[in-house]
Length: 83
Image (tube, one colour):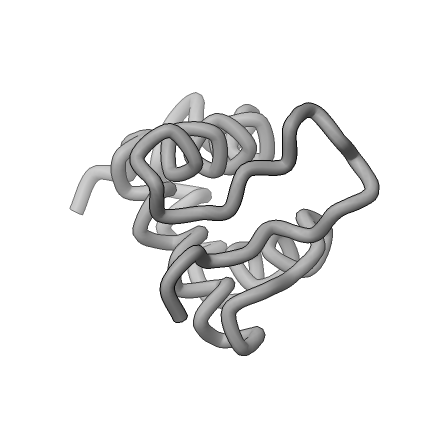
């Protein structure tokens, strides 16, 4: 399986579900690393950009109505809209 930005959307959702639907970005990143490290290491350049790509995925998920909007605030956790 090739890791892409689209894959990252699924991983962000999986991390949020694991944390009960809401988590801070650092906790999402920790979940992704602990569960998908091997895939990231084999992903080529995504190994170096995956945390940026996770934030990109969260924004796309907000745009798609899957995550609650944060309106540029950095003091709110990422949260699934419909848990």
